[in-house]
Image 1 (spheres, each protein chain N blue to C red):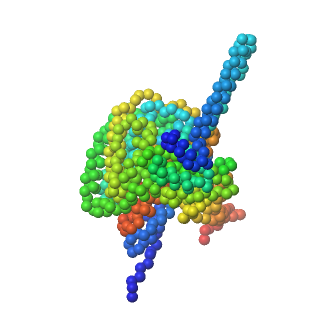
Image 2 (image 1 turned 180 degrees about the horizontal axis):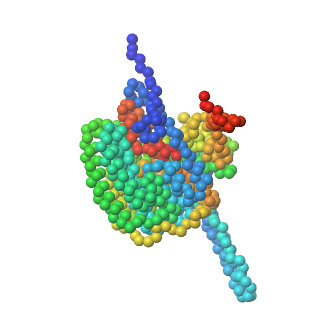
Image 3 (image 1 turned 30 degrees about the vertical axis):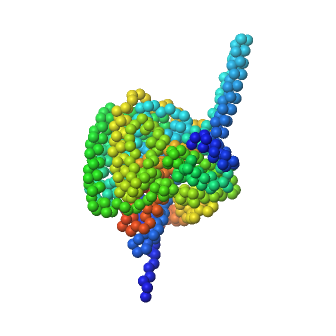
Length: 367
Length: 219
């Protein structure tokens, strides 16, 4: 009698610890091999785009913290503020633009640390988690000294930032950078040569250059597949065109490549912050913007490089006090779609490694 | 995109309208009209001064519509959207390898489906806009051109109710499958789902005091 096999449908999530939030994966399995994966999203949908249509331009800054990606609040705020500033023609003071760059890069480090720590736990390496969160704590302390908040800052304003950094903060920031850079090498020593880590990541979850582009992947996921594209270089915003940094690119497109890209990005962020601290000009930190601002009719699309990829803000104004339409181009949304391509043909045990390597935040996917 | 490429694109698809160029022209016209008005006012003011009368009321300019596009923007008829997209992707001059998002705007008289295309090799972007009538919200799907359009089109379908014809799996993505209405439409009114109303009514009955002031036990 010939052996008969049958495909099995397996439901993973939405309450699964390694899906990093409420994500449901419907897996079609042939034995232990994945033949198809369908992510089911929308559990965290709060329709932040609709909420923004009912709040004024200034109030919406606070919504970008909470309604979108909660780990990169400052990057979200920056994207929104840049869009409204472009729409209303607000000139941001020089010092505020440097401060914004410093904070965006610090937030990139903090976000990558969360990713590396939780991914380490996913792969069974508890040490990485503890080390990463030890360093992240210091970044959050730096945030707290300036913004008063650790996750939801509402620090950026349309036209600049809320207040200048306190005395001695730049010194504390420099101390952190001196402390942090050797720590990145420690992570590198801990993980990159580790045979277990390597066995679980090298060659796993490969996505090619062409597929990554067609499926809309951006940020570290695209750069790990050989797409040398970074919005900070391609269409510089704030003062990124004056700062020197490299865009790390890997060509293998596997989990290890995505890890290496993010590790190098943390080093580059340190480099950017050091330059920005050195060049930080004196002066005002906030342009005068009316609280009940009414940008003229028109629309604008601003793209920024968030830690997860291209974060776009498409703001349409009809001349009123509230935006007519806000579309948030969330990087996690498109990167998660690329997951369906990465997972085909791998085993159940690899799901966790692959899902963790693309670094999604579900509140960013669902908005 | 350079002006030559924009011209080549417009030549290839004669029904396309370059909205960014039109905005520049209308802005120049508005500036001209404003300058003429100002000259008139200054002449009137000089005359009034010479005659010893009070100066006429100063002019106030209304905010002109601005379109601060960071990219050239084209209005595409909805029948041509797939052709234009495929041509933009396959032509090495444009090389639009990535579709950044598909979404829509609900204007009072029409829906506007917005496509944002990016060329990662050439570093330029373009915006395509396809107006879609409200009583017949259909447009062809571009999933065959960029696979990444899949979820974005599902989202636009879910939140705006625009049907993307030819989409392999067009169902709701953010809202639950039994949701009524399309939340991002301007005329959308939220209604509590029936099961929620029932649960709330039941709870109200449970906690409502009886006539002698005692609450019934939740047996």
